[in-house]
Amino acid sequence: MRQQLLTDGAHKIDYEIRDIVKKATQLQKIGKTIYWENIGDPIVKNCQIPSWLKDIVADLAQENKSYGYSHSKGEPETRAFLAELNNSYGGAKLSEEDILFFNGLGDAIGKIYQFLNPFSRIIGPSPAYSTHSSLEAAHSNKEPLTYSLDPENNWYPDLEDLYLKVKYNPSIVGILIINPDNPTGMVYPKEYMERIVEIAQKFDLFIISDEIYGNIIYNEATTFRLSEVIGNTPGIALKGISKELPWPGSRCGWMEFYNRNKDDQFSEYCITLENAKMVEVCSTTLPQKSIPIIMGHPKYKDYIKFRNNSIADRSTIIESYFSENPFIYFNKTNGAFYNTLVFKNNALKKGQHLPIDNPKVQQILMQWISTDIALDKHFAYSLLASTGICVTPLSSFQSDLMGFRITLLEEDDEMLHYIFKNISEAITTYCTSTLENPELLISKKTEV
Image (cartoon, rainbow, N blue to C red):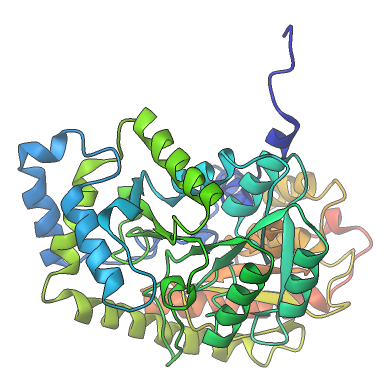
């Protein structure tokens, strides 16, 4: 081309959560059964949507208005409902004008970073959620800026690390939290959130709180919404229905702007985000219209409680398989529906392997690991080839730690036990193995 088409930052966009699907699909094509632990889609994991919720959506589909444009910022009735809901919690108040709808939070996250000055940075947690870290890196043409979450302290953030990075990096204009966290399942304690607000106030920053899992909290854990602790600091909360209802195919999420008039630059930033949505005309109408009807339904609170209790039960089952494994750090999760396992120092080494009974699968695996890749990717790809279980390597979450993410979504109990028993056994087998010529390894064990 006569000019360079892409920015340097375009090469920062990576999404291993989906990329590993390409590898799993290769194995599917030659008859391998795949168990999808790579992505948080409850529907794939046998979640049954209740009939009353389906009836609401079906009734809306019969209304002509559901097929038209919505207001550019989102359905006014829905925004008014959500503002009232926020205000019932106390803390920062909202009007319907402080809420802006998008076609899913991926769309919203993209806009957040797209319109920032490329020299202005958002610091986020590590392990990082790929959508945030990749898009922040792409906007700045640099590697993501992160603060550490500590696997030896319940995955809580290292607040001293955050403070020092903010203090000595004047390009940072905002702090990102994901609460409950993806990929770790950690829930931010109130005192940690309050300290993050203090840091933002001291250095004149704004806060972004991704709260897509905000109502998926269990095991008696407690936390606070950003609006409850933010005080007068500018901030944006990101929310949606894809995980909570769950309705991931709705692609329906929204921003809530807090204290937008406390800072002139932040106010202009919010206006820019609104104008960007106006250029697109609007977000999808029907899912927006469903929100006040579903969330106002008499069965809704009990339904959310039932789902959370079910995830809590699965967190206990998963704990039984991993908590005593000597090769990993394990933290029982209290929010969202993920768990991140971290290999202990020196647990992973080159030359480790898992048995594979199919020469074609072994050949494909050797292609995947023929280059110099992170040791946890080597494990994840080997696990996929050996067992068909598809997990996401932790190094893909902007982390120096070696491990992988799993989900707590499988609602078929027999399948749940099957998957995590095999993962736990695979960890032990892999970490106690060595092989000088892994390409020669063909096991006669029965395929999982």
